[in-house]
Image (cartoon, rainbow, N blue to C red; front, top):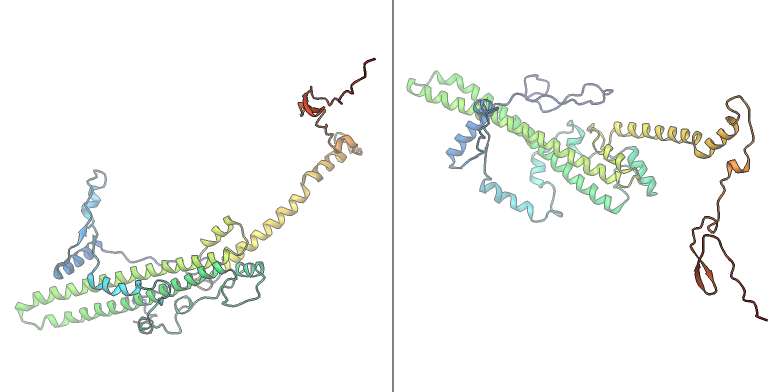
Length: 361
C-alpha cells in the first residue's frame, strides 16, 4: 500500500500549513456500518460458541423509529486466551517493561515516520525554562524536571507515550493486513465462475463473508489507532503537568496550558509559548496602568489639581487633608474599664487618674 495512493487506507494526517493554528486537522472517518459489524461478530461468536451480551432496547415513543432501523452493538466477552496472555504484564506494574522486546522489534517503525511515533520529544518551551530557572538548574535538552516528584510524573508520561506509539504502529499494521485481505477476496471473485454450478453459490457466500470480515477489521484498526492517539494525549498531559507544577505559574494558567493543542513536534508547542508571551505583556501593561492609578497617586492628584473646582487653580494640600487624624483609644471609649488601685474600674470612656487619699485632720 503506497502512501501516495489516494485510494489507499492511509492513517497519516497530512499537514495543511505551518502557519495555521492547527497544522494537522482531523480527517473525517468513513461511514461505519454498525449492522454489518454486529452481524459479522454474531456469526463469528456462534462459530466459536461464544455468548454475546446485547443491551436491551428501551421502548421510547419518541425515538423508537430510530432504534428499529439501527442495529444495537453487542458486547464481546473477554476471551480466556487473551486474559491468560495479559496476566504476565500485571506482575510488575512499575518495574516491568513498557513494551516487550519481541513486540518492539516486530513493529519497529522506519526512520521516515513522524517523530512522535518513533521517539520521545524534547521538552523545549518557555515553561521548561521557567521551571529550570526557578529551581536554579543548569540542565538542558531532554533532561528530566528538577523536582523529584515531577521526575516521577515525567517518567510515567514517557512510559505511556511509548506504549501509545507502539499501539498505533500495531493498528497501522493491522489496517494494512486487513486491506490486503480485502484485495485477496476481491481476486477470488474471478475463480467463482470456473467452479461447478452447484458450488458457485456457496463460494460466493464465502467470498462475501471474507470481504465483510476484512472491512470490519479495517474499521477496528482505525478505532485502535484513534484510541492510541488519545492515549498520546494522556502522555502529553502527564508530561506537561510534570513541568508546569514546578514552573511557578498560577493554577488557572497551568490548567489552561494543559488543554492547549499538541502539534506533534513538542510537548508544549508554539501555542503555549505564544500564550505565555501574551500573558507577560498583559501583566506588564496591567502593572504600568496600576502605577498610574494607585491610591497614593490618586489622592495627591485630586488634592493638588482639582481642589479649585476644575478652574486650573492648585492648592497645596494641608496636613488635615493628607494625613488622617486618629483618636486615642481612651478618647474613642474603647476601654470600658481602667486600671485603678490594683483593679479595673468602670468609666465612661475617659481615662481617670487614680485619686490619692488625703489624710484626715
